[in-house]
Length: 480
Image (cartoon, rainbow, N blue to C red):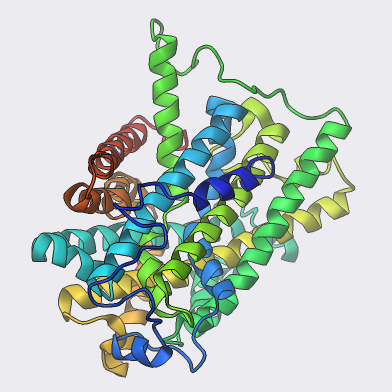
């Protein structure tokens, strides 16, 4: 968010609650005091192994950021088109604060209670039933996202029949649906060549290396988009944009008032933005992999990761909106075609830029897929084996790891239409582990009225956003 990222970063550094409720550097822990640092040896005893050095802050920031950065980023230009530039950035900033608020609750209370995983924290607060609800919501949402990512990757690299206009058929000039350019084969190759090797390691420290490269590629993507938007402005080819929200939403039926239509638009944008910032399920594994395991250090890492996401999202959102205006689609890559980019730069350069953007997005989704496997594996292991995944025997650990990946692949190939059901169920599941449980923890344990009200408000907002997301999906407007 070029124009607002610094402001958001500063805002994120301020405590969201009074110090006596949740101390900004508090992390006063029943099991672990703030002065204690989780060394690699301690992390291993807690059930999470890491290398002799542990994960550095830079790698941890990348792991948290890449956990969040996914296909949801591509819907943000459309979100800004719905509400205008100023309100769009305001809502993005609000979601940043809400994400940090919920994330800080998870990190601080897990540290206070000495809990290793999110499930252990929820079980301690709400019993086994609460833990099962949490685990189920993570499995449903995150595995659903894994399936959708494979479908999106196939769309970008191969395309759909009968044109097959993906990157690979275009590069090889084969649009006849030959077997080695089919969606199942290409996804299978990626699963074996790219995803499987990244899943060999039992350490998030190793995954952080891939996350760094993914962040670099996403920075290139956002830089390319803002540059193209600048060229469009320079050449007078930029679309008409709205700084403020439009008076009426044309999608509303006649008689729909301005206030109602604007509320629906705002809630829709909040829902999509919250999905784009979702990273709560991987916070504690990242925390336990750190070289410097202080709670205050993890909170700092979380702030920086959210600020990084905000900068990327803001850049992509405003640049996409400038280029395409009211014609912005729910997936901005559908707008960003070689034909369009060729109107701004030389056709050869346009082709190179589009291919690199697609490949960069593909790599990001692959690394994101690996981090999603980490979360689903943890929940499945705790639900069925009663152990953190890294305490499983090696055969069981790898059987579970690759079994989950294979299940996602088979579903994406043979039941691609499953995404509609996943959109319905996944929206509710996502807000459950991202906002409802953290809000309930604060509402139950907050020492001040402000803290309890903040927790309760988070729960109410989460329920409303889930309702709006489900309504949009049922009405055919899931892309805003």
